[in-house]
Amino acid sequence: MDTALVLFVISELIFYSFWVSFTRSENTRGRDIVSFIMFIMALAILVRVFQLNLDFGLVLSIATLLAAISWAIGHFIKIEDLRKESKSYFIILFVITCLRSFTYEPYQIPSRSMEPGLQIGDFVLVNKYAYGLKFPGTHYLLSDLVAPKRNEIAVFLPPHTLCDVKPQEARPDIINLSLQKSQSFLNRFMALQEQRCTELGIKYVKRILGVPGDLVEIKGYEVWINSKKLPHTTIGKDETGDLIEETMDSGVHVIRSQGISDYEEHKWKVPEGSYLAIGDNRDNSLDSRAWGYFSDQYLIGRAEYIWLHWGSFSEFPGFSRNGRIQ
Image 1 (tube, rainbow, N blue to C red):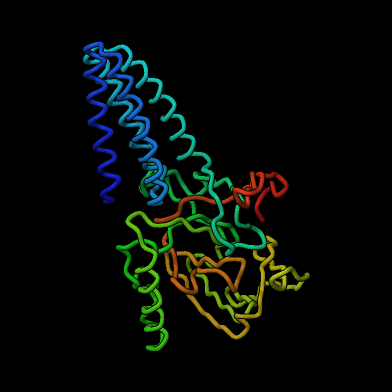
Image 2: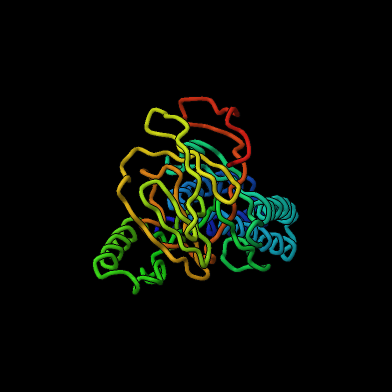
């Protein structure tokens, strides 16, 4: 647990007790001063939450619970201002938590790994019920799992971003690899995990290339799924490489090639409960080729729409890229 965040939360609770005390004693000046300090502390907590990349759904759930407790306290000790304010906060937080946890969650694209389809600064809507409903801020399913399909763009937690996941969980078929390949994977996975893992993981967005039972092979930029080659046509160039139209299960999307991976070869037999995920920017994507499979336990949702593009703070947000994600 982060020390600064813990101190901020404890300070907020202490000032909350002062606010209650000043309100009961009708010390208006003291209450106003403490209210201002509580507001500053709340901002500090939010900033720290974003710095730590904590699951915002979990943060909202905890805030909703605290608002409910405060509402009950106000009712029990008969402070009408506390009861009314806490009730208002509870209703607002409860509605936001439900909408964000069970319908759609906004997500900003942070890297170039899914270009040209998704670009840095794209804001996408992630369907949170597409793969089954989960209890807010957890991986506990409230409904049956709905299995993802090939070609869908999923948001999930990859194994190397979770500190307690072992390399063998990310690549259960490692015993079938040659000694050289298995050692190479172990070294790469452990190095990535050391650099990037957090307690709660980091969200990635990638295209699902393989589902349980699939035999997937990649040779350069050509892909075979269950011995069938995906239709593959070069349609043009952009400033960084060739644009290639790829067809998978009747869905068409565009990938980018810079010629770096021409001679790479990969082969996977996707195990049960796992998925193979690859970025469309094939030469600039940290994906299953590096860290193995991701588990259906860590599915978050399906990316469906681009609703805003804001490339940097120096430019205005725009809606020219709005539309359904291919």
